[in-house]
Image (cartoon, rainbow, N blue to C red; front, side, top):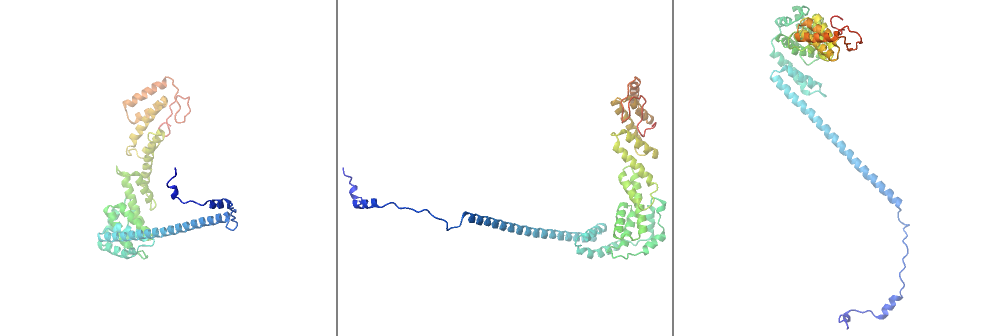
Length: 378
């Protein structure tokens, strides 16, 4: 059956098919790329581009870091300026409210800044003037009051010395009125504010070590000695601080009886470090202390407890004969039935012929009790 659509399709003449068949296939020649750049050149160009890109990134990073340093420096400078302005404002407030001690400290801090705060030079004369206006004129009466707090007779200051000091004037370029500061130190001593007076006198020394040197040194000696003695003698006194104050006072004169106070306090503090840890050393220190000051604080009760504790330790290590010595030492100080019982038990064990265990480095083999260093009988 004939396809009805076939008659409608285009047809190629038979002679055209024969002509196409006679055409030979097309020949292609290989591509020759000798005329273009090689792989080595392209690789070198790519490496150069990578280096160039890295250099650009590095330059950008350094530029950013430099900008960051500039910003940080500007911020730090702004903070310093702000701090100066705040301290200057606080200084004016202190002067307005007559807080002269605090104002002095702020002035010293502002002058120590680099560069120094401009307000320090401006406000220093004002601070001195305000202080002078707020204080009564120093008289010989205040000097007499100062002598009243002197702990030793050698520390007296005569009226002639006071008159000579009053006539002395500060000839240095220091912006502070040292005469006014000296008068304030006198008043602080008279009011019993010894440590504040000492701080102010040392500030005067720092500002001008030659200013009324004899009187300043004498007042420092008086104040340091008085404060040290208070700490030694009062029940709640700080012994460590008292020793430091005594050492500072010794730089200005003969400390006299404070030398003994310092030695006793040093022995007491040293004994505390050995209590319950090294009985022999604690007992030695406390015995030496009590030979200098028999009724010093609670040294006797501490010594008694160290004897008992040493005896208990020796019993625990089977050194019964040596424990008897320590219990007897304790009983010589205080008759305690419980300690007597411990002593009798240790004595019985010792008399049964038990060889005591060497203690504290002592050689064994002897039944004779040996007391530690510092214990009576050695």
